[in-house]
Length: 300
Image (cartoon, rainbow, N blue to C red; front, side, top):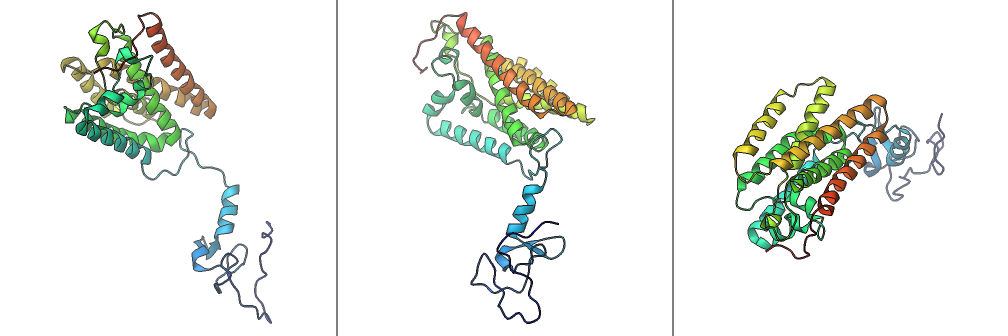
């Protein structure tokens, strides 16, 4: 039996004349007592319990001894709303509005192969921007992100979900880079690319792999990927290479998560994420190492 914390007053009994007051708010009289420690507890400090109420101190003390709840793939459980997914959508929407207000925003976040060594962060920032002249570009990506992002966020936990999103986005940019010229004397090296498609396709692949592991149906997701794969080759100015890179990265990361779950080794999932990140960065470095170095001025 646990002992009550120090400073707790004994339960009132016959002959007790002291007026019970809340230990946290001594100016408040309370005849309601915590079911666990029996101290008086004012309405502000009351927390509903299975029977009666408990004080905030006892609730906090109990929480320390409880085992942390995790998702089916080892993430922190208890996410009621896809807060992170909504946050990513909000950032993309704000960036797109900024692009409409000033072309400077697009110029600062878009990725062009000739800028890879001087401003490598563009490989990621470009995944949060979309073509200001094509509203359907951001609408489709954000709709797809909303449909699959919340599902994965609750399944993986916010940390694994965010890591997967960023690695897939980077993998999409780097895969596109591998097919482009980087010599600044080549006009093709200054062609910019933007969009969250690489990350979204990575999430598509992750849903299929994880659902298959859990015995859930993903036929609609397979059809979605097939349709968009065809669009990538039919519609002009669509970076199908980024779709492919994100798709492969998302599938590999999801496969690693299933192995980590089966072996009950959560650290294995993070090792796989780190390993794939190193491989993706290594491919980008190799691309530039075997090509002419880019100049250090931004594109117009």
